[in-house]
Length: 232
Image 1 (spheres, rainbow, N blue to C red):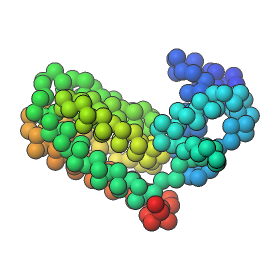
Image 2: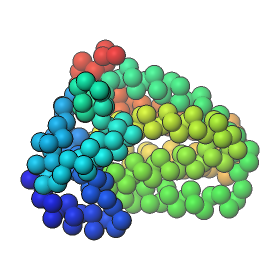
Image 3: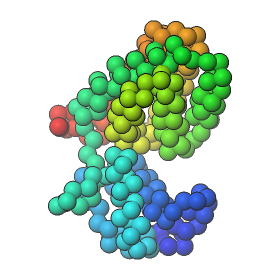
Image 4: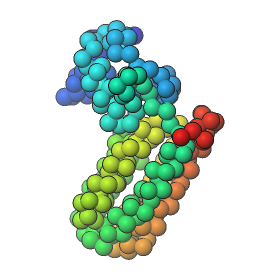
């Protein structure tokens, strides 16, 4: 059981992190480590007592996790851990593929040498981190930052929303042995295509990266939840 003091200490260790964010992090870890299984109903009072906090930060934590897709909040059933399905994931990636390839191609057309510095720094940190949550955050930043260079704000916004909707899958499966070397090579190939001002190369690199990613997550999802492949 996590006490109020323990959560406060965790918050202090992370800087300006609110108690709600500390509760959200604990729940995020439990979801990612399967302590809280998909479909589990999350009761505010029970979690508040277990973590030694009031129900207010727990309620706020639910909403934080809802924005990440890890929790579903229903007016009648309350908060539950989201239930991942392969069909749902594949549909999102089918939509994301052409959009992200287009954004990468447009970014390559407009790419400047100085744009590489920040993106390479993100890739270096992603390669070196052993924290799955940090990796997921950096991964999102890398793609969003790159696509913003396309100078297509509506396209970038569509992609960001779709990526947010599928981030829950990455949060859950970031701890299941992601192939960091392959991911690093694929990210650097995307960046290389942009640095070369080669729209076709950048687009193809993104398409390959997304194809490999959805294959990895889907295979892991089906191992953990064999019925998920047909769930809707």
